[in-house]
Image 1 (cartoon, rainbow, N blue to C red):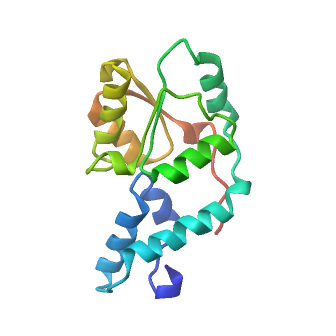
Image 2: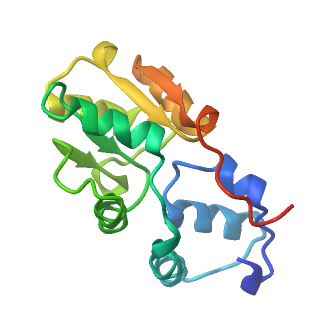
Image 3: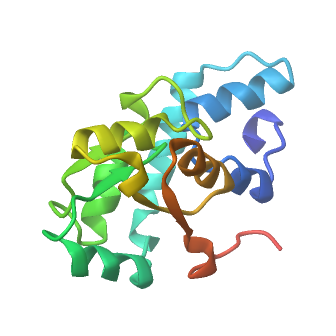
Length: 166
């Protein structure tokens, strides 16, 4: 966003966790009354992420829960990210095929903090929301889990992402 003269601090980046990139880019452009080719900027942002995916590491405290519970409980990934990126992330950390379903930004019209992504995951799993536990890394995601009537765990208590800025 810096290239377009739009301020987008790291703190705000994390505060908007769970919102699809295209929605964030449109919001930031709207805030400064700028017209952007949102699809092109989104594609550029997602490609930059893919180019850096080799830096992505699993959060052992969470992936161990997945490995310990495969086949015991239905499990899903419910993300505000785009399907192709989310699927590549899951594969990169060695969990391809471990989930019963993957729900992404394309699967719902409303996004975090709305509960839709989590409710869709529960629906696909055939599980009541009250019997679901969400492992979440953003305030908006925790709010979405709360609104869905699900239990939640703030994974930031187990892992803090490396900061780019001080």
